[in-house]
Length: 326
Length: 202
Image 1: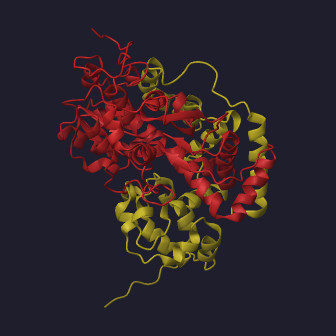
Image 2: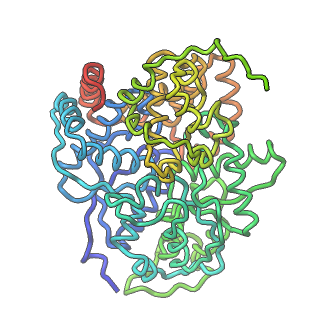
Image 3: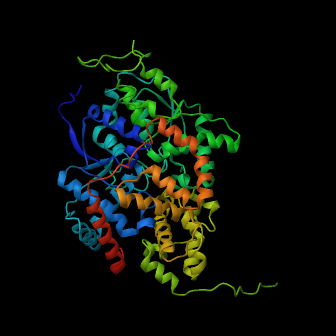
């Protein structure tokens, strides 16, 4: 067993705006599982918004890339280690922007001219990575499995990857070639490693509507409905996702979907990192942040509160503060 | 066999394709499009667009500037990038649509009630002012961009979601989260706007 204090790889961590709002449970659970996986997260100093999927319309293309430029300039001051984010949109913009800056000398000059107005510069070629890619390529699914003290036995999980976690970079050289675009395996691999059961799920990379779902649910509710319908048919106890906006859209619109389509969905939607936190025997509230889900993942809560038998790990108690532990 | 008379109501701008090739991000790859339709077939809400990407690209080549710039196509792109990874000719479809959206807003083709533009402007206000997206303020500003009455209606329709989020600590009460370097960010963004006006993106 790897000791937590040695063999750690340090990353500059970019949490993104949703980490302080709708996706706090992603951020909290990622910070909790990172040390378990030998990852040290050094938060990016004074990070700003990435521009998400509408920044280029609201502010223009170059100012939008300048947002990424400022973040990377700050990251460079923190060291040459890779930047990592758990958010799909932050990854898309920051990784994508970074690769554009690297490939286009004119763009690099313009971004740096803009940064100079704030006494910053970006001249290192940093690498910007997605947490899922880091877990696949750097940690390895076997290591994830090793850390499990509370296997999620009997939990049926629909693995919903969504779009931007894999598209358009997962199968590129710069993106670490960690999976495919239409039928990625990593999320089901995570589920399996945690002792849970991945159910077959064709909608794994279907779109939830993204920001269009936020601005205009009527245009996209049917997309979320299709995702929920398959998860329900497959008998999933929870839907697991890596993406903040997917988690929010698929969870928060269930009532409106039920009203519109006469359905009765009530399926919990959790982050893969919440599943990991539970399976690693960490605290259900502080670490797995299960209390932040608006549809309570009851079966997962039962597993977390220790009905399953916990394997002791090292000398320390697996989770002294776990709620309802007997 | 009778042949339909040519439609003389459509105006063609024969320089439009060239303008797109030169001014839209990824537009230079548009000439590679072979009209296979994989993009339109892969599109999550393509059926709700005025035209799918394939058709829109042919319209660009044909010089149908007005129809292209006012089309709903670029506003219904959800940025899923399925077309980008599937296109057999490596046309960066999503990027082209995104920049067509940005340029049609910039050049005044989008209507005042365009949801995407209003949302994007609310979003950018938050990013620029605070350096962060304040989900509460962006949403509220966006709802009320359609006027008081519609603002209330939209707010009311989603009130339960908001209250649920507050209860779960996913929507905070109090001042917006802000970065320390707000003046720095403002200076950077102002400079970027200035450079963009002068020289464009590339």
